Length: 506
Ligand code: MV4
Image 1 (tube, rainbow, N blue to C red):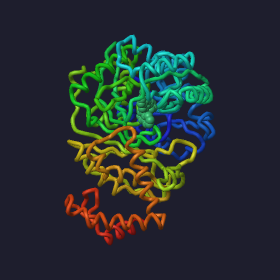
Image 2 (cartoon, rainbow, N blue to C red; image 1 turned 30 degrees about the vertical axis):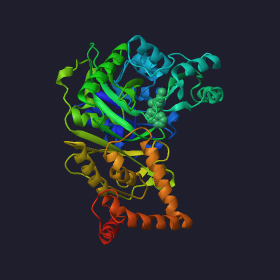
Image 3 (cartoon, helix red, strand yellow; image 1 turned 90 degrees about the horizontal axis):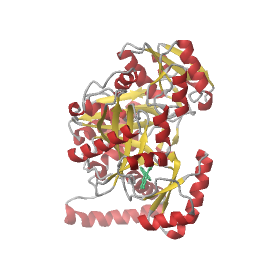
């Protein structure tokens, strides 16, 4: 077993990994950029090494600097976390070459999954269900037109080197195809240095459901349940949950077996995630594989009772999986809110600055994976994820109730956060009914924008007043509600109590 692990990351995930190291009696080495000198992960580590200027390329993306710290500290393994170098095959190879164990898959597995067309070719050979389309890059506009006619519009143009929604273009008609293909190709060249574009049938209003897999280095691979990740804003996940409200045990087994086939076809080891698109008829299609531990891993940990970081470290140390597939049992429901330093009233722009007051929630079924503390200054240089608030309970309704209370307790003073967004999501009737798809959040926010518009535009407010009066006059006869009953079904909160509560927090 490793004696010392270097965590090549920062923020909440670095703190999370350091905690797992300490639980296993393993020393933790932190690296930090100049602006992260006072960061929580630096405080929690046994040793901490400065690695340079705030820019990621000068610090958390700098392979020679990180390997130099591994050497100087005597670390025998490196955990990359997520983001930064976590899916960088060159880094994985450089660790191996330096005799330091990379806690993750091999460089070869990463490379195979890094190209979406290479991945599709491998999966096609393995009999994995793919979205209809091409497994190779498009050679010409004529070929693109033929394929699009065959699979039917709308189609999705995608960059082979892309991922996470970058370099994607939805094409509705044949007339749009040529210009869209040219635009997609030049954007792919600019963004990824690789202009290879392929085409798929566009799945309209899909759900984004991903399956956690874990493979040891002795040929055993298991799936650990799925995560519903459809609540995204501009391809950024906002809230994730497990299990998915639409996946029944039979579908879970079928998706899990496909995910295991994907991992085995990729020669995968350690923890990984197979992403699927699920259409309204509950057909699922392989999308891509993420060769890293994901931000949302805690919801899987809570419903399986497993610690994925412990399991990553153990499998990287050559241990066999300590359980077989039939021992994996899912119990209860978990939901994660990603707490960002963003201003919901200013297009969710980052909101850096000093945290002057921090009141964090607790209570039964509440977990917080956090990288912030009162008095710390949130830097502008990195992804603004502050913490993850995860609720666990026997069922989805109990989790929503628990998270609702926890969000009302959560107070971060001195900066803006997106906490109010989660209060809105948890109150939303479609969310509560689990009517989710990848367009849900954009639709909800657009409705919110219309409401805000109404509040600011006097003329619109006048029209709204008339409409509300008509609703109040007509609605009780129709369905027993009245304009004064909040549409979220929640009890009316006394304004005086609410003002008193807010004052106390200021
Ligand atoms: C799709 C799709 C619909 N049809 N492919 C988005 C990022 C990457 N994981 C792949 N993604 C998608 N690929 C086909 N053929 C829908 C998504 C998608 C999505 C698209 C637009 C807006 C938000 C989205 C969130 C998740 C998935």
